[in-house]
Length: 114
Image (tube, rainbow, N blue to C red):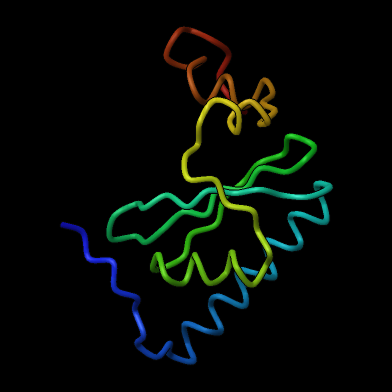
């Protein structure tokens, strides 16, 4: 059975600063892209990726050292979080020629990126 107890441990000042810095970057991304939504994705020992998708289809990501810091940054920034990067959320992402050649073009004989 999953542990549903709330973590009440104190957050270190360093973690607070990291969360505040990430929140500032999330807000800046949102301002540049007309709003922003996100999703948190665990990436192993590297931490948690904060995937950002702007209202204009622009996208990017940030990496937090822990899931707790990523969640705190999202809360500080007022980021609407999705549980999954599902079809409806993913459909908001706008990709261009660069992304297509990076994701598959090189493997299928498409033009190389400069």
